[in-house]
Image 1 (cartoon, helix red, strand yellow):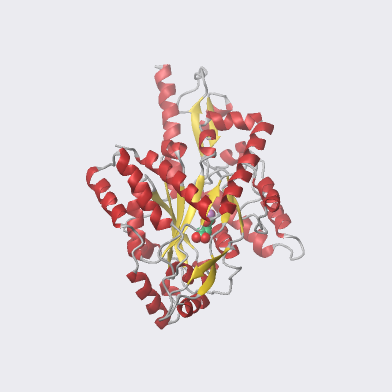
Image 2 (cartoon, rainbow, N blue to C red; image 1 turned 30 degrees about the horizontal axis):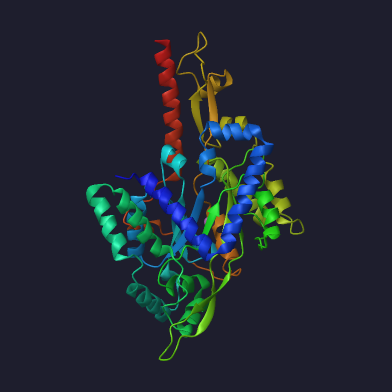
Length: 454
Ligand code: OOG
Ligand code: NI
């Protein structure tokens, strides 16, 4: 039997290969990022040693996330089963309707530390919310079109069923699974609708046309992880890429937090509409792009609330004549930027480990406050990497790749219950995952200290 981590690694590699073929600029993007990362590691041996020590160096070169947009509840439910074969579970609920985008989303990703260390591949997965289309006739038409398509091959459905029944796949079956699963994410230049239908859906929202008019949920971007997103952003034009104007997320800091993202503009690609009677009509569609991300520390709910508040300040309350980047810097001056402060004020999650060869100083108990144990050098604290996404940033990425869109103003609100009903499962709470990991590391440290003292 081939383990889920190995299947995920094979799939991520195959997906990356396919996307490189489909969108050559993505290949250039991965080269750019590899070069920036190599330079950062060379210039900062301490960083390199730290990444190596926590096992984060090996995953860097293969680290990617992708994104897809699904049309129906049934597609989402089957997608959950498909990702389960690769050890990926739905984590987090993201409501993008507040940003004028008619979808809600989750991220399928590995959840435990060992699996993330082996291959952290994740897919930001959105479900179209047709309930947000005001035009009832158009909504019905979109539903009809979506109900008729089959985005999974019979082969992959059979293998998912087999995996569920037997709890695993053999080597050859795993390869077959990867090949068959990949078909769902492939780009098809033939639309499944006429030019007139495409235009009607496109006029309701560009995103609706992207989801409804094609055979399947083509992967719309893949994102390598960089160690210096500002350098990568600055170099994108040298590689002929039109970079998004601002980097989404927090500003550059001594202690990076959460996630910073930028992208190159979506390509205009030729498509062929379904002909009405006669031959198909040529057209074009823009949806697929490339993105770069830099990951920082995972924040506690308290840290996240501060992040959300300062981001709002930068966006809404900053002086109009000051550029966004400067407003962001100014607002985030109020966010502590040393590991000690972030830990002391419980703004970020940390993993605690016994210092090599350390033992408990006389008079101190294994149950002493963890902060004291760190201060005395008995325990080392390492910040946890944020493995998830940010709804405001995601909306910015969506928007920049849908031709600026904007305009859509949905009265609707989050519908987590509806999303989970479609998914056929609850989404995991990302904070609970980080907190459990942190708590477990503290408990392990205390147990070791107790054992050593006994
Ligand atoms: C997803 C956009 C969001 C991210 O990294 O936040 C995203 C999409 O365009 O389908 O990928
Ligand atoms: Ni993305």
